[in-house]
Image 1 (tube, rainbow, N blue to C red):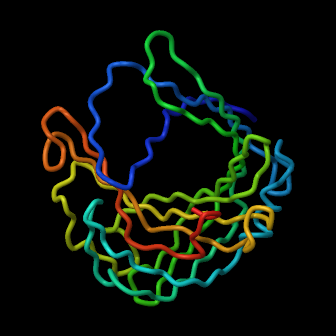
Image 2: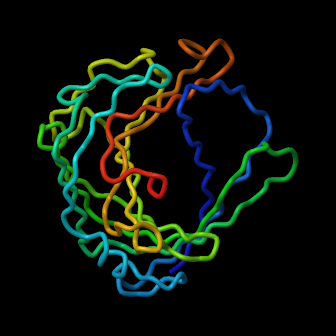
Length: 249
């Protein structure tokens, strides 16, 4: 079964707060066609199946969660418990016969003036699974449904599995509490479990080992770091885990 939907381009937050004006032009976007695969064992157009990916990533992974020292040139978030040092982390990925999808993605340029922005539309294999994210300090004790995504590169190959899961700190099962955000009073703030897992030694010497961040972004519209008529977008980072280097996230 296949269905088509249009998806606006994702806006990636920078490491520092950036000012942007309002744009009157339309933006290119990704038009997607979704095909539901029969099972996790069904090969995707990229050759790999969800079962092939699960053979590498499923199960329990242990790591150290390193709380990030807050930088003065980014959005600063003070949390309790945690906020400094490291704590043991247990991350699990369990597949519970969730839906498996192949998503074709093609860039579309609307007629008339368009924004001068780059839009990358990559086909991908994705499937529903369950994430466990538990830190020994008690900040996180999470079990939640997620979508695992493996994007095809320009050669049509799948080398990474990734997860970007939005969470609300007030609904976490762990004890994490947001104490303070600076600059204060953002118009929007979003937090993520954001990590990737290499699928083969061609990609990374430690395939199957998760690495990533607890991160997010904050938006300020016409106040604080955003003068009248502008929007400021700032990245935030609470913690990191796994072997983060040039080959990782």
